Structures are given as C-alpha cells and as structure tokens.
Amino acid sequence: MNTVVAQAAPAPPAVPTERRLPVPYRVVARWRETPDTVTLRLDPVDAALAAFTPGQFAMVHCFGRGEIPLSVSSLPTTGGLAHTVRAVGAVSAGLCATRVGDVLGLRGPYGTGWELERALGQDVVVVTGGIGLAPLRPLIRDAAAEPRRYGRLNVLIGARTPEDLLAKYETRRWPTTYTGVTVDRARSGWHGEVGLVTGLLDRARFTPAHCRAFVCGPEPMIRATARDLTHRGVAADHIRVSLERNMRCATGTCGHCQLGPLLLCRDGPVVDWSRAAPLLSTREL
Ligand SMILES: Cc1cc2nc3c(=O)[nH]c(=O)nc-3n(C[C@H](O)[C@H](O)[C@H](O)COP(=O)(O)OP(=O)(O)OC[C@H]3O[C@@H](n4cnc5c(N)ncnc54)[C@H](O)[C@@H]3O)c2cc1C
Image (cartoon, rainbow, N blue to C red; front, top):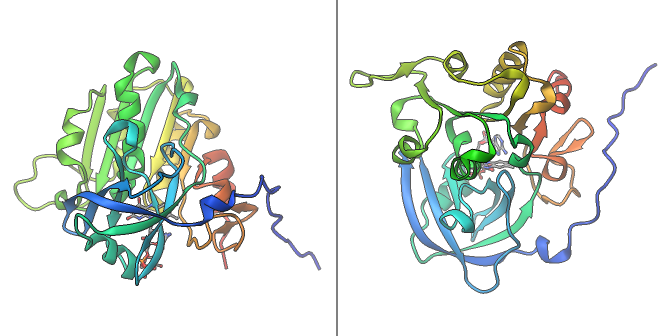
C-alpha cells in the first residue's frame, strides 16, 4: 500500500521568545470601513514590536475573547500601524467593538511579506477581493509613493456589494495607471462595474512577461485570478498570493495551519503561486 505523508518544510530558526509574548498597544483611532469592518490604528503603550513588512501579520489579542491573526493594513512609516478587521466571529467582533483608548495585545511580526522589491522595473498588478484589500494596502501605498521604481501600477478591486468596498476615498486618490472596481451585486444607484474581479484584467495595462502580480481575497477568487493570469502568460512564480488557514501559535509549532509541506504561519501567508497551486488542487481532509 502506498501511503503519502506530507513532509514539513525544513524548519527555519526558532522564533525569538520576545515575539511569542503579546505587548500592549492602544487604539488611537478607529473608523468604520463597511457595515461589518473596522480599521484600528494602534500605538505601542511601551516598547513597539519589530517593524512589519507589507503582507506580514500580527496575532491580535482581544482581552476576554481570544487572539486572531490579522495582516497589517498600514505601517508606522505610512500613516501608523493599523489592522482592518471584519467581524465574522467572537474575537473579530470583539475587536470591531473596541473604542479609542482600549488596549489590545499584539505579538509579531509573523510570516512572509509581499516582497514588492521583486517588482522593480516591472508592471505591477494587484488583485483584491473583499477584506483582501487590507493586506495589500501598504504595498499599493509603497508602489504609488515611488512610481519610477516600477512599471505600470494596476489595482483591481472586487467586493460583494458597493457597501462592502473598503477604503473608498483612498482608492480614488491612488495614482495608478488603472484602478478598476467591481461588485458581485448592486442595487440602483451604482454606476460602476458588476461582475467578477477577473473581468477587470482585460482593462488592466501590463505586459505579462514583465509583470508581478499580488493577489489576496477568498480562496476561489485567488485560484480564478492566478489561473487567468497564468493563461495570459504571467509566470506562476511571478504571482504572489496570501493564503489563510486557522492559526494558533503563529510560530510554526502547533501545526494548525499546515497546508501540505507548508506551515502557513511560518512559510506563508504570502507564497508564490507556483508553490501554492499544487497544494490547493489537493483536497484537504
Ligand atoms: C495570516 C492571516 C491574516 C489575516 N488577516 C486578516 C485581516 O487583515 N482582516 C480580517 O478581518 N481577517 C483576517 N484574517 C482572518 C481572521 O483571522 C479570522 O476572520 C478570524 O480568525 C476569525 O476569528 P473569530 O474568533 O472572530 O471567528 P471564529 O468563530 O473563529 O470564525 C468565524 C468563521 O470564520 C472562519 N474562519 C476563522 N478563521 C479563519 C481563517 N483564518 N481563514 C478563513 N476562515 C476562517 C471560521 O471557520 C468560521 O466560519 C486573517 C487570517 C490569517 C490566517
């Protein structure tokens, strides 16, 4: 009998102890993005955590409720450390309900980043679905701040309804080559696109052989987008995707977030599509 056992990737150096302990951060600003999503800007009460890079995440502790992974949606270098959280369960709803002045526990930074530097001199294609815009916001800001370092910048945004669109006022100000916004369903009064975010790829301006793509959203949207990009000629290892699995320790120890040979808290969440595609085509038990 053939038994296939997923081999864990070689372990990188252990996470330093100080990154396993939550440190207090105060909510210094809070704004509602959509009916179920809030952005919290946080300042350290004492010492700050080490610097995050776009795409990395923190374990955010809501006292009395628990702890969840949240990507950074803004960095201290560009507007202050912020997390954007959608209320889907006990902890995320608790975080959405916090007020300015409340204190949360944060540990991190954890995981891999988008690595925008790989796109130097290349066209950039950012494709987001729903809350997936939040982890890509710092990358878009970095690329928009230094347009001469990159080729054409395209930002494609999808959401379920117009009410679910994040960062509405900010997206209009991004100096991109092309910004496209589409929704799955709209009531009267919406004059924009209706349809899948992949439908916007025809309007984006990029040369497939000279582009880097960054994709974040629900997993079916990630698959569809990455497949469409590869069919257009973008190499699978030029597409970076952010994957989510249930995470607990965030230090590569507990195994909750295993995907084939990867522990996504340590080897992800951002991985090349060339690495992710074969793993996502295998049904998990
Ligand atoms: C690396 C990483 C970064 C993330 N960044 C963000 C972010 O920036 N903003 C944000 O709003 N959310 C983000 N999430 C998702 C967030 O962590 C979950 O929504 C949260 O853990 C839900 O916890 P809860 O206690 O509120 O709800 P629960 O009661 O634990 O879950 C509610 C529902 O959400 C599902 N769920 C729980 N965790 C996940 C998950 N990780 N992936 C998919 N479905 C899940 C559950 O199956 C359940 O159906 C991220 C997840 C990961 C792994």
